[in-house]
Image 1: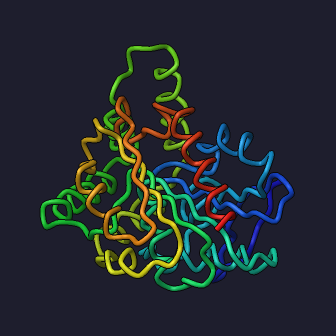
Image 2: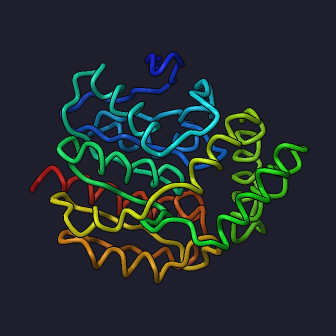
Length: 267
Protein backbone atom coordinates (compact mmCIF):
# COMPACT_ATOMS: atom_id res chain seq x y z
CA UNK A 1 0.00 0.00 0.00
CA UNK A 2 1.30 3.47 -0.94
CA UNK A 3 0.29 6.36 1.28
CA UNK A 4 1.03 10.06 1.64
CA UNK A 5 1.46 12.24 4.70
CA UNK A 6 1.48 16.04 4.76
CA UNK A 7 4.56 17.48 6.38
CA UNK A 8 5.61 21.14 6.37
CA UNK A 9 3.39 21.82 3.38
CA UNK A 10 4.87 18.95 1.37
CA UNK A 11 3.75 15.43 0.50
CA UNK A 12 5.88 12.58 1.85
CA UNK A 13 5.25 9.23 0.15
CA UNK A 14 5.77 5.86 1.81
CA UNK A 15 4.74 2.24 1.48
CA UNK A 16 3.27 -0.05 4.14
CA UNK A 17 3.43 -3.82 3.95
CA UNK A 18 2.61 -6.52 6.50
CA UNK A 19 0.47 -6.59 9.64
CA UNK A 20 2.19 -6.99 12.96
CA UNK A 21 2.73 -5.22 16.26
CA UNK A 22 6.43 -5.16 15.35
CA UNK A 23 7.17 -2.02 13.35
CA UNK A 24 10.20 -1.54 11.08
CA UNK A 25 10.99 1.64 9.15
CA UNK A 26 13.36 1.41 6.16
CA UNK A 27 15.12 4.65 5.18
CA UNK A 28 17.03 4.80 1.89
CA UNK A 29 20.28 6.58 1.10
CA UNK A 30 21.22 9.58 -1.05
CA UNK A 31 19.86 9.35 -4.64
CA UNK A 32 17.78 6.28 -3.76
CA UNK A 33 14.10 5.84 -2.94
CA UNK A 34 11.94 3.38 -0.99
CA UNK A 35 12.05 0.82 -3.80
CA UNK A 36 15.71 0.10 -3.08
CA UNK A 37 14.39 -1.92 -0.12
CA UNK A 38 11.87 -4.00 -2.12
CA UNK A 39 13.58 -7.35 -1.52
CA UNK A 40 13.95 -6.59 2.20
CA UNK A 41 10.33 -5.47 2.47
CA UNK A 42 9.02 -8.71 0.93
CA UNK A 43 10.84 -10.82 3.51
CA UNK A 44 10.44 -8.60 6.58
CA UNK A 45 6.71 -7.99 5.98
CA UNK A 46 5.99 -11.66 6.69
CA UNK A 47 6.49 -11.02 10.42
CA UNK A 48 6.55 -7.22 10.74
CA UNK A 49 4.72 -4.11 9.65
CA UNK A 50 7.23 -2.47 7.32
CA UNK A 51 7.25 1.21 6.36
CA UNK A 52 9.57 2.22 3.50
CA UNK A 53 9.96 5.97 3.15
CA UNK A 54 10.72 8.29 0.25
CA UNK A 55 12.77 11.00 1.99
CA UNK A 56 11.98 14.62 1.07
CA UNK A 57 13.27 15.46 -2.41
CA UNK A 58 13.67 11.77 -3.30
CA UNK A 59 11.37 9.33 -5.05
CA UNK A 60 7.83 10.70 -5.08
CA UNK A 61 8.23 12.95 -2.03
CA UNK A 62 8.28 16.73 -2.37
CA UNK A 63 11.12 18.98 -1.28
CA UNK A 64 10.53 20.80 2.00
CA UNK A 65 13.15 23.54 1.58
CA UNK A 66 16.53 24.51 0.16
CA UNK A 67 18.29 22.57 2.93
CA UNK A 68 17.00 19.23 4.15
CA UNK A 69 18.47 18.89 7.61
CA UNK A 70 18.63 15.44 9.15
CA UNK A 71 16.37 16.71 11.95
CA UNK A 72 13.67 17.90 9.55
CA UNK A 73 13.69 14.61 7.67
CA UNK A 74 13.50 12.73 10.98
CA UNK A 75 10.46 14.85 11.82
CA UNK A 76 8.78 13.61 8.65
CA UNK A 77 9.27 10.01 9.75
CA UNK A 78 7.85 10.79 13.19
CA UNK A 79 4.81 12.34 11.49
CA UNK A 80 4.28 9.12 9.50
CA UNK A 81 4.49 7.00 12.64
CA UNK A 82 2.10 9.32 14.49
CA UNK A 83 -0.36 9.29 11.59
CA UNK A 84 -0.41 5.49 11.80
CA UNK A 85 -0.59 5.34 15.62
CA UNK A 86 2.80 3.67 15.93
CA UNK A 87 4.42 4.51 19.26
CA UNK A 88 7.74 2.69 18.78
CA UNK A 89 9.68 1.36 15.81
CA UNK A 90 13.00 -0.05 14.69
CA UNK A 91 14.64 2.35 12.25
CA UNK A 92 16.91 0.95 9.54
CA UNK A 93 18.90 3.47 7.51
CA UNK A 94 21.41 3.22 4.68
CA UNK A 95 24.08 5.96 4.53
CA UNK A 96 22.00 9.21 4.44
CA UNK A 97 19.13 7.16 5.86
CA UNK A 98 21.34 6.30 8.81
CA UNK A 99 22.07 9.98 9.45
CA UNK A 100 18.31 10.59 9.50
CA UNK A 101 17.76 7.62 11.82
CA UNK A 102 20.39 9.00 14.23
CA UNK A 103 18.68 12.40 14.18
CA UNK A 104 15.42 10.60 14.97
CA UNK A 105 17.13 8.94 17.93
CA UNK A 106 18.33 12.35 19.10
CA UNK A 107 14.90 13.98 18.86
CA UNK A 108 12.61 11.07 19.74
CA UNK A 109 14.57 8.53 21.84
CA UNK A 110 11.42 7.11 23.42
CA UNK A 111 10.03 6.23 19.98
CA UNK A 112 12.90 3.88 19.13
CA UNK A 113 12.83 0.14 19.72
CA UNK A 114 16.14 -0.36 17.91
CA UNK A 115 18.47 1.28 15.42
CA UNK A 116 20.24 -0.32 12.45
CA UNK A 117 22.84 1.60 10.44
CA UNK A 118 23.96 0.26 7.08
CA UNK A 119 27.19 1.93 5.91
CA UNK A 120 26.46 4.98 8.04
CA UNK A 121 28.28 6.90 10.75
CA UNK A 122 27.46 8.96 13.83
CA UNK A 123 30.44 11.21 13.12
CA UNK A 124 30.02 14.54 11.29
CA UNK A 125 31.65 15.28 7.95
CA UNK A 126 35.38 15.91 8.05
CA UNK A 127 36.74 19.11 6.50
CA UNK A 128 37.82 17.03 3.49
CA UNK A 129 34.31 15.57 3.14
CA UNK A 130 32.72 19.00 3.38
CA UNK A 131 34.97 20.19 0.55
CA UNK A 132 33.87 17.16 -1.50
CA UNK A 133 30.20 17.96 -0.89
CA UNK A 134 30.76 21.59 -1.87
CA UNK A 135 32.34 20.44 -5.13
CA UNK A 136 29.46 18.01 -5.64
CA UNK A 137 26.97 20.84 -5.15
CA UNK A 138 28.64 22.83 -7.92
CA UNK A 139 28.63 19.83 -10.28
CA UNK A 140 24.96 19.13 -9.55
CA UNK A 141 24.06 22.74 -10.25
CA UNK A 142 25.76 22.52 -13.65
CA UNK A 143 24.55 19.06 -14.67
CA UNK A 144 23.00 16.76 -12.08
CA UNK A 145 22.66 13.86 -14.53
CA UNK A 146 26.43 13.72 -15.12
CA UNK A 147 26.98 13.70 -11.35
CA UNK A 148 24.55 10.80 -10.92
CA UNK A 149 26.05 8.72 -13.74
CA UNK A 150 29.52 9.09 -12.22
CA UNK A 151 28.54 8.70 -8.57
CA UNK A 152 26.34 5.59 -8.56
CA UNK A 153 28.74 3.04 -10.13
CA UNK A 154 31.48 4.14 -7.72
CA UNK A 155 29.36 3.00 -4.77
CA UNK A 156 29.55 -0.63 -5.88
CA UNK A 157 32.64 -2.78 -5.41
CA UNK A 158 32.23 -5.32 -8.17
CA UNK A 159 30.12 -4.98 -11.29
CA UNK A 160 31.48 -8.05 -13.04
CA UNK A 161 28.46 -10.25 -12.36
CA UNK A 162 25.13 -9.99 -14.20
CA UNK A 163 23.29 -9.64 -10.88
CA UNK A 164 25.34 -6.64 -9.76
CA UNK A 165 25.30 -5.05 -13.19
CA UNK A 166 21.52 -5.24 -12.95
CA UNK A 167 21.64 -3.78 -9.43
CA UNK A 168 23.74 -0.82 -10.58
CA UNK A 169 21.35 -0.17 -13.45
CA UNK A 170 18.37 -0.31 -11.12
CA UNK A 171 19.87 2.10 -8.59
CA UNK A 172 21.03 4.39 -11.40
CA UNK A 173 17.50 4.56 -12.79
CA UNK A 174 16.21 5.45 -9.31
CA UNK A 175 18.83 8.15 -8.95
CA UNK A 176 18.05 9.73 -12.32
CA UNK A 177 14.52 10.39 -11.07
CA UNK A 178 15.83 12.46 -8.14
CA UNK A 179 15.16 16.18 -8.79
CA UNK A 180 18.09 18.58 -8.75
CA UNK A 181 16.68 20.53 -5.79
CA UNK A 182 16.30 17.32 -3.78
CA UNK A 183 19.94 16.47 -4.40
CA UNK A 184 21.17 19.94 -3.44
CA UNK A 185 19.03 20.07 -0.29
CA UNK A 186 20.32 16.68 0.87
CA UNK A 187 23.96 17.56 0.19
CA UNK A 188 23.57 20.79 2.17
CA UNK A 189 21.93 18.91 5.01
CA UNK A 190 24.54 16.16 5.16
CA UNK A 191 27.51 18.50 5.32
CA UNK A 192 26.05 20.42 8.27
CA UNK A 193 24.98 17.49 10.45
CA UNK A 194 26.43 17.35 13.99
CA UNK A 195 28.42 14.67 15.78
CA UNK A 196 25.93 12.19 17.23
CA UNK A 197 28.28 9.72 18.91
CA UNK A 198 26.89 10.76 22.29
CA UNK A 199 23.59 9.15 21.29
CA UNK A 200 25.36 5.83 20.93
CA UNK A 201 26.83 6.07 24.43
CA UNK A 202 23.44 6.56 26.07
CA UNK A 203 21.16 4.58 23.74
CA UNK A 204 18.92 2.31 25.86
CA UNK A 205 17.95 0.33 22.75
CA UNK A 206 20.07 -2.09 20.65
CA UNK A 207 22.14 -0.59 17.84
CA UNK A 208 23.31 -2.67 14.87
CA UNK A 209 26.11 -1.45 12.60
CA UNK A 210 26.46 -3.21 9.24
CA UNK A 211 29.65 -2.31 7.38
CA UNK A 212 31.21 -3.27 4.08
CA UNK A 213 34.84 -4.36 4.25
CA UNK A 214 35.39 -2.79 0.83
CA UNK A 215 33.46 0.41 1.53
CA UNK A 216 35.48 3.32 0.12
CA UNK A 217 33.08 5.94 1.54
CA UNK A 218 33.00 4.98 5.24
CA UNK A 219 35.76 2.87 6.80
CA UNK A 220 34.47 -0.25 8.47
CA UNK A 221 36.96 0.01 11.36
CA UNK A 222 35.45 3.37 12.35
CA UNK A 223 32.01 1.78 12.50
CA UNK A 224 33.30 -1.10 14.62
CA UNK A 225 34.68 1.41 17.13
CA UNK A 226 31.35 3.26 17.16
CA UNK A 227 29.46 0.03 17.81
CA UNK A 228 31.63 -0.49 20.90
CA UNK A 229 30.38 2.82 22.32
CA UNK A 230 26.90 1.35 22.65
CA UNK A 231 25.74 -0.56 25.71
CA UNK A 232 23.82 -2.83 23.34
CA UNK A 233 25.97 -2.47 20.24
CA UNK A 234 26.25 -5.15 17.55
CA UNK A 235 28.65 -5.10 14.62
CA UNK A 236 28.44 -7.09 11.40
CA UNK A 237 31.08 -6.95 8.67
CA UNK A 238 30.16 -7.86 5.11
CA UNK A 239 33.40 -9.34 3.76
CA UNK A 240 32.54 -8.80 0.09
CA UNK A 241 30.41 -5.68 0.35
CA UNK A 242 31.22 -2.03 -0.25
CA UNK A 243 29.09 1.04 0.45
CA UNK A 244 26.09 -0.80 -0.99
CA UNK A 245 26.65 -3.98 1.03
CA UNK A 246 22.92 -4.32 1.78
CA UNK A 247 22.54 -4.71 -1.99
CA UNK A 248 25.81 -6.44 -2.91
CA UNK A 249 25.68 -8.94 -0.05
CA UNK A 250 21.91 -8.88 0.25
CA UNK A 251 20.81 -12.14 1.82
CA UNK A 252 23.52 -12.47 4.51
CA UNK A 253 22.82 -8.85 5.52
CA UNK A 254 19.08 -9.50 5.50
CA UNK A 255 19.52 -12.51 7.78
CA UNK A 256 21.51 -10.37 10.24
CA UNK A 257 18.77 -7.73 10.18
CA UNK A 258 16.01 -10.31 10.74
CA UNK A 259 17.83 -11.67 13.78
CA UNK A 260 18.33 -8.12 15.09
CA UNK A 261 14.63 -7.28 14.78
CA UNK A 262 13.66 -10.40 16.69
CA UNK A 263 16.14 -9.59 19.47
CA UNK A 264 14.84 -6.00 19.79
CA UNK A 265 11.29 -7.20 20.34
CA UNK A 266 12.36 -10.04 22.63
CA UNK A 267 14.10 -7.77 25.11
